[in-house]
Image (tube, one colour):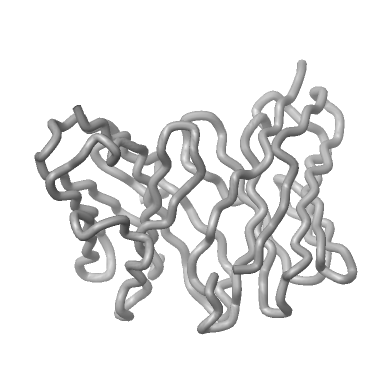
Length: 116
Length: 115
């Protein structure tokens, strides 16, 4: 597609339930990133995939959070046993990768997660 | 991580130029300077980036100081649609650098454009 696609756009879930958020990056973009943004806050890095390299998981806030990227394309962010503090907009971005990482990110529109 | 410092907010009038400053006094020789903006209720949008030389594209211009310790994003004629949060970010091009690969967003500058 022309841009980064995320689904669902909105998700309301009950505390304690698991949720899966999907990201479909731009075709050919080998790097994929997940961020989250709580209301009125800045963007918080979660995880980064680059090709076949081991993902950089340094931003995942707890072991309830996990992500995978299948076939170097679509990625799924899973949050287990959701808590109210997980409520945020979850943003996915992708980019080309080359010498010096001299490329910009393209972000999706995000998934707004509300835990009630 | 090399850090950036931006004013919390700035205001401009429509049709006037806007100069958004960013200080990055601890920048390393391998850091690129990236600018993104986030319009209300949207994901961030890439604006421009540079290393040493000034850069121009259809959205904006980036002026980089000779010592690279500061830069300025220039919107030549502000429109109401330019009202957004503008982020100045350093991105290390060198493998092993702490900001290699990923962008670390700060609080940015909230730009208000008055009609």
